[in-house]
Image (cartoon, rainbow, N blue to C red; front, side):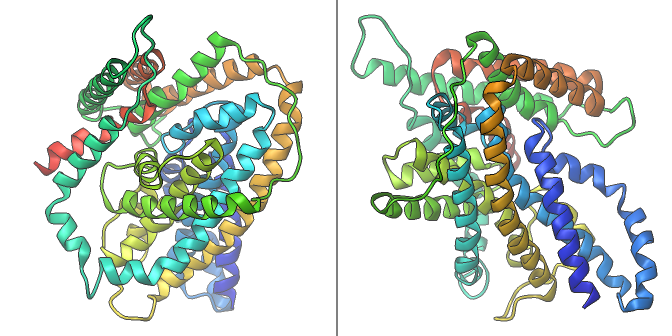
Length: 446
C-alpha cells in the first residue's frame, strides 16, 4: 500500500514539475530530467527509512521513474500555454505556433489552449486503447519493428522527402502566380532542411560546458535557437496587439466531433511513429499526421499536434518494454533506473503497470490544470506589458543557454537563431529545421 501511495504522490510532484517545464520557455523536460538525476541519491536517502513501514528498497528507483514519466506527460500538456500566449514554442510545439497565434489574435487564446488539452487527453485515452494492438504488431508475434529497423534509413529519407515535397510555400512574387511559387517553396524547404542538417552536424559535435558545472547538452541552444528565439524576435518586430480574450467554455460540437476524433487518432499514430523512428520529433510527426488526415482548420491542427506530442511521450516509455529502445531523454533515464522487462506475453510487466498508473493520473490532473492555467493566462494577457514580457523571456532563454552550455552554447544559439528566422522570411514551415536531427541520424545509419 505504501508503495502505491508513494507512486501516486511522486506522480503528482511530476505533474507540478511538468507545469514548470511547460510554462517556462526554453526549459525542456529532458533538461530538468538531467538536472534531477543528481538528486536521485538524496531521494533514495530520504525514502530509505520508510523500509521499516513496508517499503521495499528495490521499489525506490521505480517511484523516482514515475516522477520522470509524470513530468514528461504533464509537460506535453502545459507547453501549449507559452506556445499560444507568448509565442515561444519548443521543438515539440513549433508547428502549432501559427494556428494558436491566429486564434489568440482573434481573442480565442483560451480556446486554443483548451483544444490542445482536449487533443492531449484524447491521445492518452487512445494510447491506452491501442496499447495491446501496438504491442502485438511491433513485438511478438508480428515483430514489425524488426523489419522497420532494417529499412530505418529509407524510412527517414522518405519522411524527409514527404516534409519537403508537401511544402506549399507562401513566397510572394509580384505579378507571378501558378506553379512557380510552389516550386520555389519546395526548393526553399529543401535548402533550409539541408542547411539545418549541416548546422546540426557541426553543433552536435561541439563540446559545451556549463560554467557552473551543471549538466550540459547542446540540444538546448540548438532547439531554443531554431524555434524559440526567432518567434520572440518576430513578435517584438511586428508588435502584435493582443485583443481582449473571450472566455466561453470550449466544447466539441456535433459537426466537428468526427473531425476531432480523426485528429486525435492520426495524431496518436503519428506520436507512435515518433517514438519508433530516431530523429523524428513531434513537429515532424504532425506533418505526417496532417498529410494523412487531409485538409483541416486551425482548430484541428492544434488538436492533432497536441495528440502527437502527448502520444509520443506515452509511447517512448512503453517502447522500452516492447522494442527495448529508448527514444527520449526521459526514456533513457527510466531505462537506467529500473529493470525493463521485455513484454512478451499478455500480462503487462509489473514495472510498466506502475508507470502506466502514473501516466493515467498525470494525464487527468494535467488536463484540469492546463484548462485552469489557460484561463488565468487569457484573463491577464491583455493587462500585462506584452513586449516587456517577450523581452524578459528572450533574456531568460539567453541566460539559460549561458548557464547550461557556456560560451560555446551561446554561439550555437546565435547561429541557430539566424537559421530559425529563415522560414519566416522565406514563408515555409519551421518544421524543415528538424533536418538538424534527421540528417545526422540518416548519416549515422548509412
